[in-house]
Image 1 (cartoon, rainbow, N blue to C red):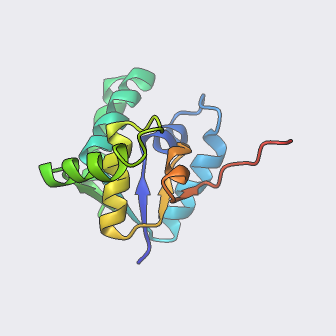
Image 2 (cartoon, rainbow, N blue to C red):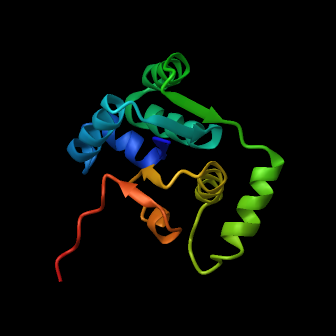
Length: 143
């Protein structure tokens, strides 16, 4: 399985040139597309990405994102139901109660667990804390 979970942090960074890691995330996203990766996300992440995109680039850019994802068979948007929500709270927020995971993060981790997706296109280090591989790989800090 060549599935990669797509998170809002890297998605926005790859779209918005003013973002700090734009070049690295754009290159990583293009590589995933070229490799034919199955790009999996949730409706929560898509909503978060849409909200961030309209803040950075305006409503037309937000609508363009939604249209592109809907038209592109490489993307799968999983709908979060009560079962996923409940398991995300129980398996991630309760177990990692010392971590500042958002509910959206926890739902993403639960979807990755259920779908056996080991890698995430993300800049959010919480994915590494949860045990998932981050793409692009975070750079090591000196020291």
